[in-house]
Length: 333
Image (cartoon, rainbow, N blue to C red; front, side):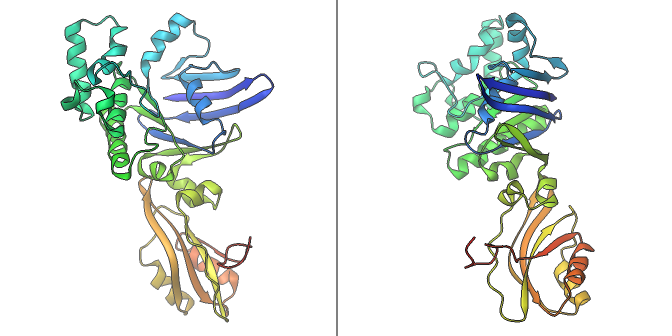
């Protein structure tokens, strides 16, 4: 478990992280998202104390790290594995030697190191590349080696900073499946720093939106998508702009508010309102283990707004007329 309380980081008069609070439960994956300069990388470095916070506390598995001495911190960091964006492998060392590097600081015997390295390389599907140098490996293979090295000290927490950035979709998928497997099989708590919404939808249990050094939205991914039309929610589950409706009809924006929505809702609501409902666009996905949806429909203008809102709400769907500037295709924002 990771518990961050009142975390603040300043460089002179510039505040990069501003009084951040959040908790990551054991055995879960949390994604931290935000624009460049939002403070994501600084948060990453503060969690493993590569950067000491100006104030606030960081606890990992109940141990408070921020006030430890250098020697105590070296020991405590064994519980925190780190995976960097470009894997940060040493070019003159083979894959096996890179993975073995942190183990040598633990005073293990060569036999113990060899056994552990083989186990780790096998875990990430790279045992057949043990004697290859980084320059002989693809980007995805280097990242797998980086993950193996991050797991070398058997950490309870793994920090991954843009671990899939620059990788092709197939390789990204394989890395995400690997991270999910580590969470499921080893109960490792994983913090993923990313700007890719596909990554968040694919693997994260929880998402934190960092903006100008503050957490502006936090929660389970499915809940974030269903509870609002915030910037993060719409980025996680986007929909197409609504087209202009013909005369006598109105365009509505819909969002699943509940995790369990009856798949036959469209025909049911159509019957209840005694009108045709035209589906213009939509996206329904499994997000965070539950269903989430964002759709656009067209309904006759003769129906009262409150009646339409109530009908959809009874089926766990939030409905609103698409009247704001920029919501209708062709209308400038």
